[in-house]
Image 1 (cartoon, rainbow, N blue to C red):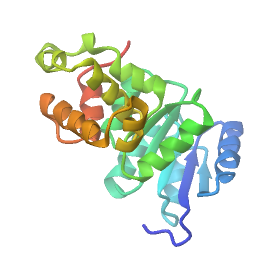
Image 2: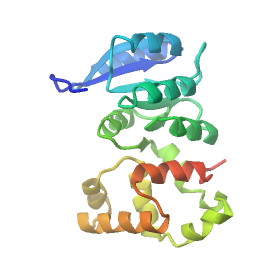
Image 3: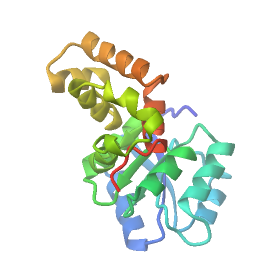
Amino acid sequence: MINTDGKIKIMVADDQGLILHSLVTLLNEVEDFEVIGSAQNGVVLLQLLEENKPDVIIIDINMPKMSGIEVTKIIDGKMPWIKIIALSMYSHPQYIKEMLRHGAKGFLSKNCLPHELFEAIHAVNDGKTYLDKHCSDIIIHNFSQVKPDFRTNLQSITAREIEIIRALADGMATREIAEKLFISDKTVERHKTNILKKLELRNTAQLVKVAVEQGILIQ
């Protein structure tokens, strides 16, 4: 859906009224964001989607009547172009796994900073996958937890490649990674290619998804 005013259209769903109001107020203060709807449960959110089509939805996981996971699955099946970000106080591995499996493109803890939420919105709107630092650490740090049939490939990953994976999981673009690690764009791309080849994956989104599914998580 093309927005003529250039703003990213956002909907927010959270069963806690104060948090919902705060999020709407916070997001509307950002110049290129526009909140076009809010709901305190998944049923109302789906009703809003009958007439309004946002670019991004920010959704809590634990809501009455219908969970964020159930809503995400429905939206991904009917309107896959809408990008969904989970914003939850629960960052248990199972929640991350289920949200990503059912179509979410981002996952953030409610303890995240505003700039992380803003970065996540821009990242998923651009077609990237975004996890905040806490969720990224859950995926990256626990390589020892992976299943045996995946461990051999992971053992070939170098320290530098782990840095690249962390940055990719954080939603950073090639240029940003290059600047952060003081290397060239071409070197970053070469590392990305090598990582995907070693793990037999096709793209960054698949890397994050497979990492979650294979149990590369801190318990």
